[in-house]
Image (cartoon, rainbow, N blue to C red; front, side, top):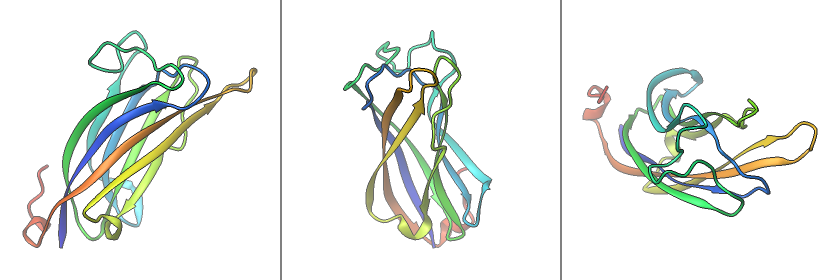
Length: 155
């Protein structure tokens, strides 16, 4: 039985001691359950190509420590029993340091009525030894479960 879900990036909050200004992408991916490199569908939740672009529609270019932004970007996806949801990121800071971890898995069986998922993303700075860190909060809401969705994908 397939599950139709709404996945949303709700907030980003700087929980570190330095400003953060991530460029790159945050995505919701539907992947093969036993091989997350086999991507069946992708939806972008956050995309920022360059640091001179705002990271939010309100014009914000960075988050100071303790600051958060609401995004509420939502995408609808269909997940089949042999698939999983992956919250994927490929983000970096100004000096080219990559944030980690890159993937957060939500298995088919774990998708229930409503779930809030927080993912910590961090970069350790070389010489200074400091850490850039922010938390992205996502929600996953089960919209429906039905047999028909197994053959009807929105993509």
